Length: 450
Image (cartoon, rainbow, N blue to C red):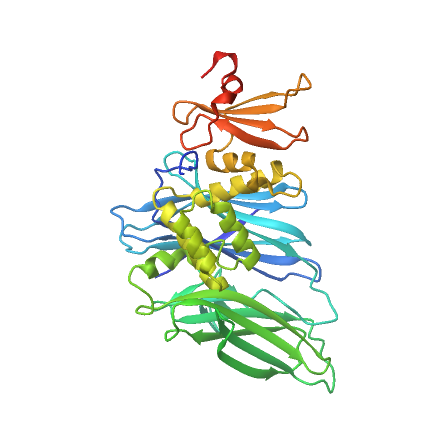
């Protein structure tokens, strides 16, 4: 299987945690996708992405990218692609992007976009989405994904345009960001399995915008007949007067004749000058592409709990006081935004470690990241050396020593399984700020090593 890059478009702690710190951290990445019907079984997948340079540059900026399409069930990479986008130096807020299209059978997949450092070709940052594809054939109406767009040119004569579909040029907005310079939220969606029938009632279409509290801000409703087996619906909302914040676009189809409804939703963010403090808007420009943009309440709480190892007491206090999900989303985004100013890619590396720790170090119902080994792994990474011993005598306990050569000239962590059931607890370390118990120095410095 191959990726097909079809078009380019231009749109007017922490010790041990690192990626490539020499990379340009003014670059933001955005990734989005939409699934449409290819035939009754297969899905036509469109992947949208863009690179945004937030500040002016003296020279053109080249951004190397890698893309991966993974089968999550078999843990295999089905396709990969490499390319480099160039943002012109004369663009104060340059953005470049592309679209990738392919056809997929039913399955579980992940798309991943990785930014590489130009000089070293090491990973700087990444963003990914997991999704499934299922057959579109059904006795009931099915919907494609609800695609958010920066513009839709209807009745276009440019049939050769790579953004042309169903008589229109449809330009995606993978940032999901709208406001002063992009005030119209365009949407595109396809309906399938309408099954025309004599005497059947028309379909009712309802489209609404809801704010972060779930209140309806704007709504429209109209009918469509059943003349065709499929329909394409497009429209737009002007958000120039909206307050800055998170919104949800809801598209619903009501079949009164058969007494059921289907809907699809997509989130977007509005940034309008004057509706938030100075400096907030620039910072929040990357919020729609972050993992927190659509994250649910339980996941938000878990991700902050995992981040408590690098959080200040004040940050913990503030997060605990937040009751509304949108506030938690924005708080977590800001939390990592500030830390990534000097360490781009830090958030991805941190949570990759947390996920690994959860898989490897869990015990007796405790998540792996909550254990002592999990915490040390998250904060300092994989040890350079592991020294382990099982109990040799009845009065001995199994122990493991993790050695880090590059922390403070070389440090160690001693974990002992006091219960003998693989529950290793940290009992001593010679890293400043960590627990140190001199009575364990005989274990900590085995073979005379320090």
